[in-house]
Every structure is written in structure tokens, then in C-alpha cells.
Image (cartoon, rainbow, N blue to C red; front, side, top):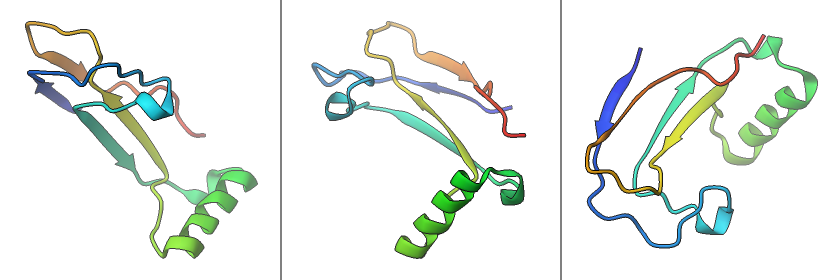
Length: 88
């Protein structure tokens, strides 16, 4: 289990995580996972191989990203990881 607290004193104005050009989040937590690449479908394996060929780096098997929400709160947010989906 991973647990954290965060507090942002001032959020950037006019942000919207659903719009790529306006997704300037003041705080993010990204968790990367290792996994058995052989269990991925051919498209996902191709994407991993292409990324490695173009950059020389290995892309994580899977990631979860949590972003600060735009609604201001007086208390810090508290999040616990719960995978949105699992790879089979």
C-alpha cells in the first residue's frame, strides 16, 4: 500500500486534466510497475519495443498517475492506491 498527503497553496488558474493543453497539475504522483511483457497483446508489445528503439529507454509495464484536483480544499488530500485495472 502507498499512502501520501499533499498540500498545494495556490493552484494554476484555468486547468483541466481532461484537456491536454490545460493539464498543468501542481502536484502528481506516478507509480510505475514491472510485469511480464509476454503477457501483453501484440500491439502493446510493439509499442514497448518501438519506444525502446526510439529512445533507448525501457517504458514501464504499467503506470498509475494521481493528479491534484482543481477544487481547493482547506485540508490536504489523502489518497491510497487502488489499481484502476489489472493486466492479465
